[in-house]
Image 1 (spheres, rainbow, N blue to C red):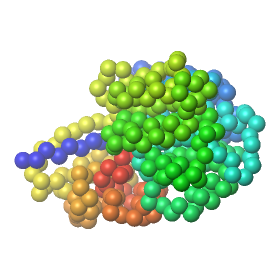
Image 2 (cartoon, helix red, strand yellow):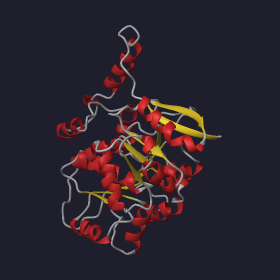
Image 3 (cartoon, rainbow, N blue to C red):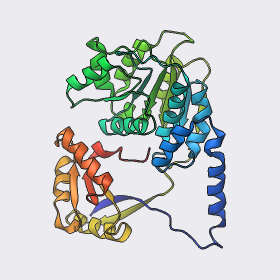
Image 4 (spheres, one colour):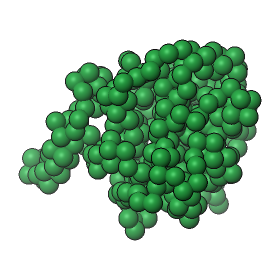
Length: 351
């Protein structure tokens, strides 16, 4: 018998007034601590944040804002899915808005964000673009033409988001100037290490950093876990003093607390039927579900299995990048309810 492991994100239902007092109190404390009025955020940015459904800063955002805004180096740990992207996006945008901007054509980026996957890079870039109308945000990753990226560099970039491989390509070709960087963000650092990007990341950083200099760019490391390599990077590239914010501590659960984990034993021939039943029970016809598979073949076959009994599409490495982006957009927009994917889709998440 095979074990089928299902990770289910459960949206809490509203409890009765008698039993919900503690929850309401907890929410009100978070809202109070994360109120926009507690932070130097412009009315323009607040309006754009509200357009994204954000009405106050989440705990990781509130606890890191002043560190980022004041220019301090930072290592921040928080569960996946708790809003880490806006933790650096909001204060960096406010900081750049408050400075005199050189808008000349061909200007090099002031902010570099490195992400381990194309999907995460795209999501981070969108999060930045959604809350600034004044700054130029670009996203560079492999699998897309170089021509459009060359054009973006010729026009000038303020915030550059990308994957290590493509950023390194542009540096080696002499097209990308990182010598004017003021802020560097390594997002999901633990995943970069797992995917073998450590050497590439250090090659990229070596272009913008000088040894033992206090004038190096502000360095921000965000991760769910902090392997030893993270602290090696901190020692090598960060200033002599840096801040640490850890919202996980010794807890073993690295995902958001709204994630419930179930293990269901079934024979491999019954997996599609069991998954279909689980989707109907936990998600219904209006919810959205992501199913992760180990192989591209499994993802393709499962998405076409009638036992799922809902509109499903697959997402894996054999699908062209452009089609993957269309599929992700359709899933986010609710065009279909079930996405069957390999780990290329790990980064479909809240900012």
